[in-house]
Amino acid sequence: MTFLEKLRCLFTFGQGVALSLPEFDDASDPIALFHTWFDDANKSGILLPEAVSVSTCSKDGQPSSRMVLMKSFDERGFVFYTNYGSRKSHELEDNQKVALLFHWNVLQRQVRIEGTVEKTTLEESANYFNSRDRGSKVGAWASKQSQQLSHPNELKERVKQFEQEFSGKEVPHPEFWGGWRVKPHYIEFWQGRASRLHDRLCFEHSDSGWQTFKLHP
Image 1 (cartoon, helix red, strand yellow):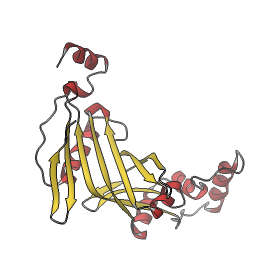
Image 2 (tube, helix red, strand yellow):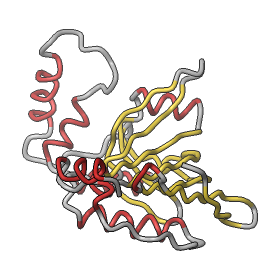
Image 3 (cartoon, helix red, strand yellow):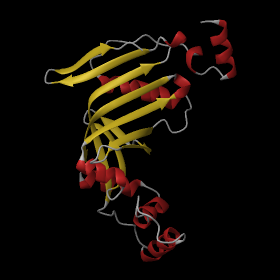
Image 4 (cartoon, one colour):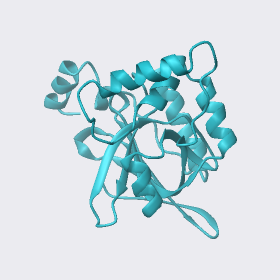
């Protein structure tokens, strides 16, 4: 590490190249490796390590990205929840191809995922919805996500409307709200290293399973 790099580490509180960086293992299971990295991110004290950028594309080829919270993952894919009337949901209905990006700056790590989507089952969506706090449940009913407000107080008025409608009873799961599961066919693990000689470990899925290779930084 150069003197300049050491100074940079000092003034960024040891983020990135100042950390002890593990060697990559040629693991055949990217989900297991993601599990390890996600645990590391949780232990690092990063705020919301489950935050992930979701990139979709419109019919005319215009990409768009936004941050959401991943709520679960397993060998089937990575799940987040949203309003099915939102822009991202409309674009995913038209074009099932999607990309995710996790970025854990303190660890100098990021994970890129490319794949296709499917909706979670009604039972999965209802189970997660029912685990949310009451305010979030009412908010899901009140928000016409991605639509323009007709006037500045519309959202507040709709929140009040549904608070009154569901007063004294459970807030039901709305049919227009649920999960998307991203089924990956490409996963790239990026580990920052000194002198920008970063590691990029890639997994690509084929009929024979996951194939592993590395890319130049």
